[in-house]
Image 1: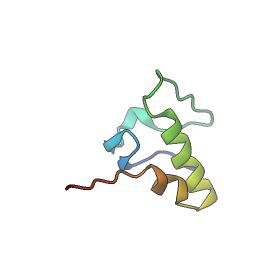
Image 2: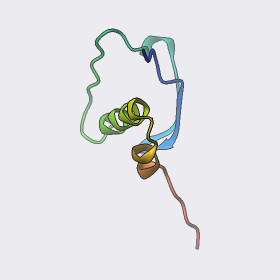
Image 3: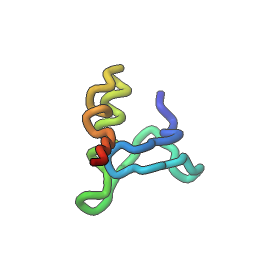
Image 4: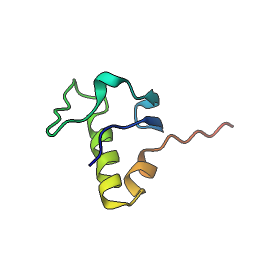
Length: 67
């Protein structure tokens, strides 16, 4: 069972998330927030971990191109 996300770097809205003790998963965990705050990104990360397929994370990964 997944207990927590230790870190998320440059995926969706998450520039450099680090785990804090008050943000661990329980038997049931509710993730809520306003539109555009990263709920779907968290769901995509969890789905990618469950499926062992990085496609959803890679699709949301930051990419910068400097001209």
